[in-house]
Image (cartoon, rainbow, N blue to C red; front, top):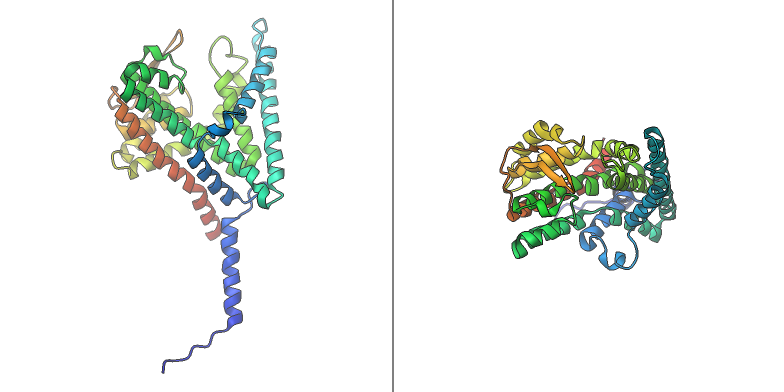
Amino acid sequence: MGEVILIDEGRVTAHIAAMDTSLANFLIPASGFSGPLFTILVLALVLDAVFGDFPWLFGRIPHPVVWVGNLIGWFEKRLNRSDRGKTDLITRGTIASLAVIGVASLFGALVGQISALGDVFWTAEVLLLAVLIAQKGLYQHVKAVSVALKKDGIVGGRKAVSMIVGRDPNALDEAGISRAAIESCAENFSDGVVAPLFWYVLGGPIGLCAYKAINTLDSMIGHRNARYLYFGRFAARLDDVANFIPARIAGGVICLAAALGSKTSGGAAWQTMIRDAKKHKSPNAGWQEAAFAGALDLSLAGPRQYGDEIVDDPYIGSGRRDALAIDIDRALSLYTISCLINAAWPVALKALWILL
């Protein structure tokens, strides 16, 4: 007969209970403000991957970013006067920006308080994060450009790319359309994916809503033209600050994704990013664009036309300038891997927190 092993049921039960507690603390940690941070992140990212921009919902009601945009428009119409001086316009733009950010933050605080009730009320925070992260939506918009180019040629490509970039589509050939789509994918990976997640982890629903307000302000009034040069200056500078860390995280994530991809180069992505990121007029956008350019062996940016204005920027990257629709597909593969890595870093951070 084999040896009989006596088991202390009390000790086993206590050990299992301790394991259950540790697992629960990992899966449902408290965030900086309230709520099960890890669980909310996972559920929100899954919802975004499945439903994207929730077209079935926001085809019937305005998207929260549209609400923010309407509020910005309301302030801009009343405060941005061409007969005012430089200092006055900067002050008015600052007041408008802070008011919009304040309203958005209050909404985030309300969602946070609802979520703090626990159980089913966490759904409010999950939905907020899912709606304000643009992973699938960005993929679909960029993919539409590739599909249109292949199916309808230059005319279809111009129409599709006009939905995601501000430059004059009629001045673009196939290479210009393809580069524009890839540049939009690169820049918005930070603005629409990395930064919202970063500010949510850092500041909960308040941080998330404040960031989306700042980013929307920059996209609407942060332009260097006669109308917004002074009125939108505060919004543009604040957006630069808010995206400073996320942009560099995004660049690093893209380099790692390029190293893991089958038809991309992580080394070239890193070298190009370090060398060419500073060529971009934005202190932040160059990091992602340069990483994409190096990974895909392309040259991005360069001279572009926005309406009547021609921007004579240097090229970023030393690869081909004649990008094609297939290069958009390659960029989307790189983007997909980057999104998966971006979704994993909060989990890794939590694991390190527990271990250390």
